[in-house]
Length: 633
Ligand SMILES: Nc1ncnc2c1ncn2[C@@H]1O[C@H](COP(=O)(O)OP(=O)(O)OP(=O)(O)O)[C@@H](O)[C@H]1O
Image (cartoon, rainbow, N blue to C red; front, side, top):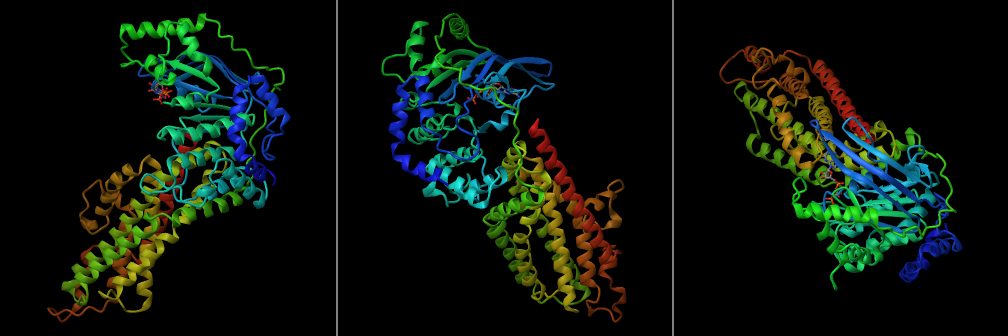
């Protein structure tokens, strides 16, 4: 593939090229692209240009019978080949406007969008605008345990057609283009795990969207949280993307003067009103004309932010109100002389659709590989789980080793079984619940883009998570089984013990998925896990025994997989244990199982456990599916 080479050759010249182009007016810019053929040879034909226009766009939401107008008749346009920056005070409506233009916000019962949005004159309602555009969210939505190269490669394989070689070439080209080669094999990382720097992570997010070669690139605050130098690197990349012919539009919070100087066009919002739209470099002249001169040596961006700031948006002071009114009326009355873009070469867009290039089996295999790499590298799933099991096993060994096989010690024996069951249930459930919220943003984003089906994702995730759970549990079982020892009548006893706990682990992972699918953050997942697990544990048959369940609560045992797991391992333990009592000659009356009111066979307990395992997983799937459907609305 040639593009990678072309990019690397041009890299050193980019800065000069960008700056030179910036000095020219818009039409000469476009001609400049036309003369040089686009450097990308995949995806969209970059000679297709899109001018995005919005006319009188308003957004009104209704909450508790009260209407709030967030956008108030905003009009504007974003030209191909240019970087349009949206600025305004916090809450002015920048993200809302960007979301509406990207088609991410739609009218519903509580929110209404009015106005017309067109791309090359075609209403975006009449086409699948997602085919032409891409959106980079403010949050970095990436899997923390993958590298940039892996993230881009999986994204490419899921979203674009082509052979493996072509995917690799496309990814290498993007990595070079975004100057990510040096960190391409480092782990992305997260807040809790050191990985890429903020700027690198943001560039990977941009790269994830460049995979489909979008003609319109929309970004929500790509520089937030970055220092001014790193922010400038990101802006330079956006300008480069624009110079390739893309229409680039981004919200930016607080650009430095040197960043501001690089913007092609500027759109300023104040309290949902448009107060300026035009060339960024012309803005100081415009504001001076309407009575608000930018002080000498002051960053115009800082000046505008201060000018447009309203302390209490619900109750603006008279002065603030008057200032915004002045700016709004000045904007609508002063001619902007901003019609310098030649639209004659723009072609109407066809209603093309993104075609999912993979079938269910391919999606499953790619997602399984991705989920497996992510799970394998997750410290929670590997080191922490091992540590937890080894610690519990070690303590059990110290406290309970060489336990006598008599009736007196059966209480301790039962407690060990309960501890084993509760540890497995708690570790598995919490682990799954904590890992899920980290991955759901990417799943929801991809499912919004309809890259794959929820079932292929869910099945891949469910399977990929299992191996990392099995081994620590096996280590725990081996550690305690012969040290106590538990029932050593024959080897099948150990395997039944391990198998039942394994099944419990699989079912509790499902329960963890339910919790993980319900909450949005890891912290919340940690907080709510005990709330769900503990009641189910209390109805596991040991606390109190089945006979003593209060009336009306009897049914809880049927939704608790712990109940059936504990009965199965107790039956496995006490049948053929060969107890010898010191106190009685006839041990037939010593019946720990009977004392516990456990009467079911191991087979029926395992059957209940299997049914609950499937049930939990189906519920988790439905919750995830519902979230995916809601995210597409
Ligand atoms: N669904 C909603 N329900 C209630 N209020 C909303 C909703 N969406 C947006 N808003 C409100 O609309 C206003 C504009 O929100 P928006 O996110 O567009 O602002 P912004 O200019 O991007 O702000 P920031 O720079 O702080 O991100 C805010 O006051 C926000 O609270």
